View: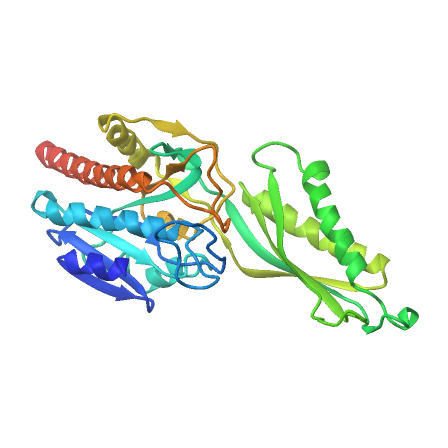
Length: 364
């Protein structure tokens, strides 16, 4: 709905990757600044009592994408009303498959950055309730980290629970591995940013619904998050060793499988970040400094191709639930703050580019 509304306001629009849409405003010429948002829901029930509670059972916008899309609608409306003042082109990218981290690469492959006018800069923003409403949070350089999804499978030998000597139960080694993964961070990882690794197990399966049967195999699926590629490679190697050694001690076998590619970090371009700082300052705000965060986003693929800045808009208070909680609800006022800051940063980036270009012409 958000994408279709914005394209109704836009001077031009294009579809990508099935549900992906780009709304375009301005002259249709360079410089071109693209703004990115995800549009996915997630398979988490909405247990809030808000007036905009999800109408879909067990599907919600607790990842924040619904709020971010609404925020971009505000941005689209402002650019539509001020379109004659845009000395260049603004593209708002509504990207699907953000939660599975597949959408960015697909849209880039289909030409979202290269279709005329080619994108010169990226601006990205997302709300987060762990920061107070209206706060702007970012940092130059690395902002979001690496992420690898993985699956460990432990193979035993299934059988009846009353005749256990003929079976090899894969659940005890899986339980041991689960515990040892917590020890890995606490006891083996040196507490320096370049070494930190967070390992989270989000799903455990025994492939067996019967209570009187020892399963043939078990599996766990989770994520590894780091600030550096070396820490990621070290973690993958160590978890693989742990899984195989623990399984062997229980007369089982284990395998480690990487699911998908390693999501690269979001890197805020140093030069573009300075322009962003100016935009925040002239809006009578200040950036709350942030250490690099161990969250990840496939938006990083855009920033690998085009210089840009990604930031967080505070949307909560001390009583707010975190994102991905079924009780997650952001302060709607944060969308006003965010939309205004995105619009201001976009125009500042475009005007700075034009000023530099004119300066270079004068020198010639």
